[in-house]
Image 1: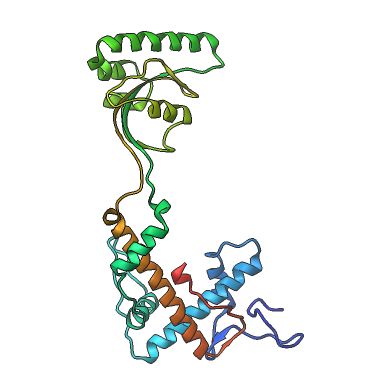
Image 2 (image 1 turned 120 degrees about the vertical axis):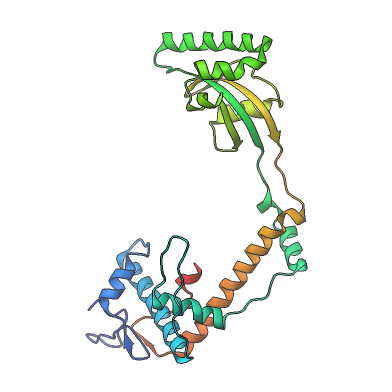
Amino acid sequence: MSRTSLISNSPGKVIPVSVNGVEISAESIATEAQNHDADRPEKAWAAAAEALVIREALLQKARSIGLVAQPQTDEAGRRETDEDALVRQILDAQVTTPEPDEASCRRYFENNKKRFLTSDLYEAAHILLQADKRDALAYSRARREAVVLIEALQEKAGQFERMARERSDCASANEGGRLGQLSVGQTTPLFEAALREMKPGEISKKPVETPYGFHIIRLDEKIDGGIPEFEAARPLIEEFLRDASWRRAVSQFISLIIGEANVTGVELKGATSPLVQ
């Protein structure tokens, strides 16, 4: 069977992919298929055909109501194609969604509080004495040096940045060892565990061992994570609900357009658009 068709009414009979008599070529489907990940080529082909059918139906609808392409240019200077502009314009003209009200936002917040849980944040600096466990002598030497530096810093904590610049094997040495703001997952588990046990203003009392070597850590500030108040989370909730509402409305509009069109060669199951993925 030719790959220009996805379905056939009888053996040997090819049905071309088309929308209201406008055929979508095999070449166009093959090109579009490259944009669809799938575990089998035929799935990518079917997804591509569906996307192009929806696009063609939208373009036909836009032209039928007299829309004229008005391409926009983004900040990078890239200009829309006329067809992309028409698809955007038909959706702008035909799809409307209500703004999320406070009651909807509060209901979503109460039902999804865990989604807004933030992790602890740390402002920290460190001195890294790089060492490889496979070199026992160098590893032991780095540990001893870390202990000596910690002892010195217990007496003269203000020397931390100077020591970092002179001795740290991390690129942060140029910044006096400052690592900036850290959140969960940005450092090694052992480094994070040490941060959790420290208090702001404290310098680690013993070397912190990680696969990179030995660290001397200074914790400058800690911001506890948690669930924010509703008003702090509201802008994110509004954005989410607005986007979800728009996606549903677009899918409904596309289903209506496809329902009115004469589509051949592809079976659209609950037609949704690649525009709202």
